[in-house]
Image (cartoon, rainbow, N blue to C red):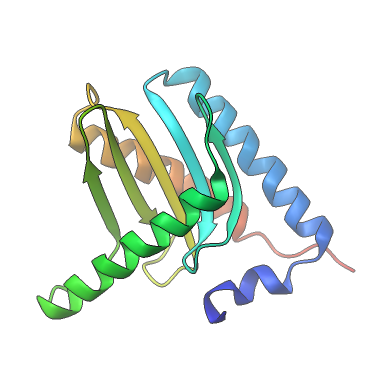
Length: 146
């Protein structure tokens, strides 16, 4: 629950504003990058804020899966004395999934993006990081006055 503390301080208007702005970023990204299959912004404890899918998908299920992937990444980072997990990549037959924290490595927000495999892994990581930087500016805005 601690990772969602920032979200819990948001009013309903704050959540709506963040979702609207993130959805606009997702729409712009999908319009310019047809290789994107999925993008989900969630908290690290698996609570989906919003998501977009090129076809069908479930943002809540994707957020839960990404939370598990990051937990494995965090455990591996500790076990291998590699530090805090900043991103994780899952490669599959037809898509690569990049999950990374939005903003600082201690951020409670996580971005997960799935892209077609023709996008090289380095490019997928860079594209996800760039999108994450834009989303960090959105989620780090001051809450609306109540």
